[in-house]
Length: 105
Image 1 (tube, rainbow, N blue to C red):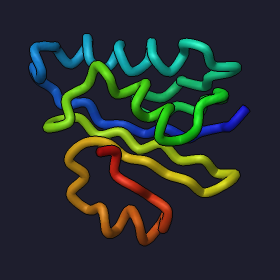
Image 2 (cartoon, one colour; image 1 turned 90 degrees about the vertical axis):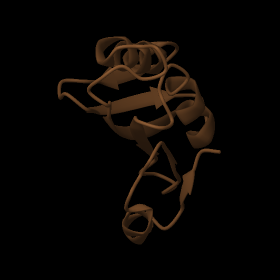
Image 3 (spheres, rainbow, N blue to C red; image 1 turned 180 degrees about the vertical axis):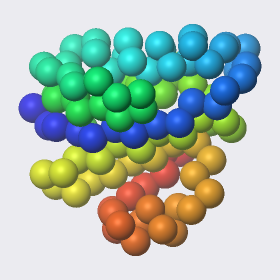
């Protein structure tokens, strides 16, 4: 099982025909589905254990989100892999902290 840190920002409005609450719940439900453990006490940060690889896990949890409005970053502290989704304005700075960060196509 890989362990991931997931941070996200869900746009506070309707995007892709879904409300903020619908898109946030979509991410949470997808993250919990099939995971071994999940710590989700804060508003926009999760710690997840799953069998999926970093980009595959990111694809799974962002299916219900808007690539134009919502941001999600998945980081594996063990192998330092990182995938991100959405309009990350400071991608160079993200890669400064996590050199292996790659945008989800």
